[in-house]
Length: 145
Image 1 (cartoon, rainbow, N blue to C red):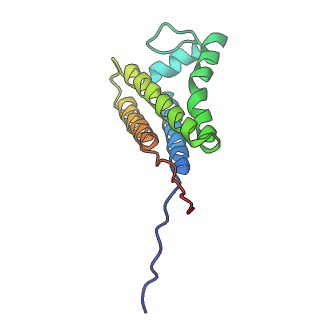
Image 2: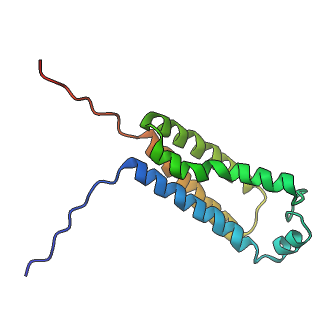
Image 3: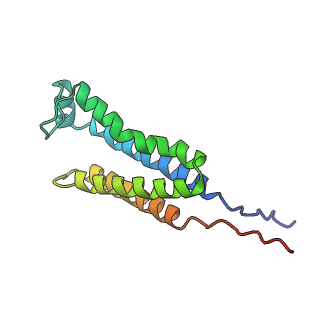
C-alpha cells in the first residue's frame, strides 16, 4: 500500500504575519507572567512599584503600558484587514520600533529567562519585518488586445 502524499499549500503572507504577531504577544505575556515568580518583582508589585525602576504602578503607568501594547495587539487584526501596501509598511515599521524597545529593555538585565524571552521576541520581530519587506508584489494581469 502506497503512503498518502500530502500536498503542501502556500500560506498567505497575511496569515503568516498575523501568526507571528500572535507568537510575539504570547512571548510578551509569558515573560511578564514568569516575572511574578521573582521575589523582587512580586514584592515591588505588592508595594505598587515596578522592580528596579522608579516607576509607580498607577493609572498613568497602566494606561501607558496599555498604549505600548496596543500596536502589536492591533497588528494581529490590521495585518488581515489592511490593504497589502499599507499592511506591509505597518508591519515593517511597528516590528522595527518594537525590536528597538525590546533591545533597550535588556540593558542591565541579568535574568536569563528575560534575556532568552527577549531574544525570541527579537527573532520573531526580525522575521515579521523581513516577511513584510519581501511581501510579493501584485501580479500584473495582461489582457490581449
